[in-house]
Structure formats: structure tokens, C-alpha cells
Length: 188
Image (cartoon, helix red, strand yellow):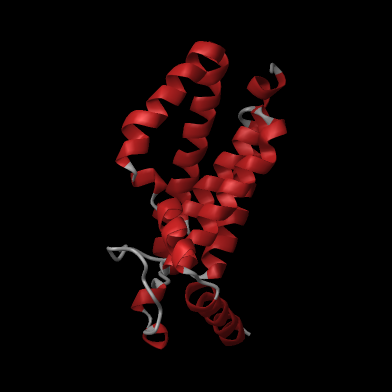
């Protein structure tokens, strides 16, 4: 059963990484997957957005930012510090059977593959933000899905890494919203 699943995972990885591609999509998904490292965005655009948001919503913005930060801290810690060392699944570019995999980044990420921190963090964040801004739920989850899909597209994760990471992020976001952030969300 496990061999069958691994074969399916590798086949789907091959399709996403090498077949369902286009040069424009290559650049798009590299940009999406590296958005958190974009210095122009981090140092110029994001501060302006945050200043405007804090000016408009003051206390509410601080509550949301604290909830979002805590959810990402927990999801990232669980995925990176607990699950990855426990499972120890190598990334696709380190697997002999996938030597034809195309790494579309100018560096090769280290560490293990399962689960995808990008997927876990973005889906946990989408859950938390959706609780405060339900009318924007589709946008939050669409962005999380784009980030998750970008990971096998650029060659650094298997589809099951992002699928399980997304499920973990959704579960963590749900639990945090329900049991930890409930009072703040209800006061909205």
C-alpha cells in the first residue's frame, strides 16, 4: 500500500513539476514560493500596509496580528520541529528515482520534506484570518493554495507534503480559532 502511494505521489510530482509547466508559470510560482523573502515587499510594501491597517483598525489589528503570529509560530514549530524530524522524508531533489526533477530555484532547500511548512503556515493563517474577515475567506485560501501548489511546481516538495501540510494548517487554525481565539473573534 505504501509503495503504491509513493509511486502515485512521485507521478503526480512529475506531472506538476515537469508536464504542467510553462515559462511564465515558472516565474510566477518562483515569485509566489519566495514571497516571504522578497525584500522589496518586506521592507517597503508590507510596512505601508501594516501602518494603514493599524491606523484604521487599531486594537482589532493588533489582536488579529497576535492571533496570526501565534498560529504561524505553533504550526511552523509543529511541522518543522516535530513532524519533519520524526518522518525524515527527503526532498524530491535528493531522491535517486527523481533525478529528472527540475529544481526551479537558484538554491536547494535543506531539511526534510514532510510536511510542507509553507502549506501548513499559510493554511493556518488563512483559517485565522477567515475568522476575522469571513468575506475575504476565498482570497486567503486561494493565496494559501497558490503557495502550496508552488512547492512541488518549483521542485522542493511532493504533493502529499503540501496536502498533509494544508490539512494540518486547517486543523490547527480551526482548533486555535475555536479554543484560544474564540473570545476575540466573538467580540468582533
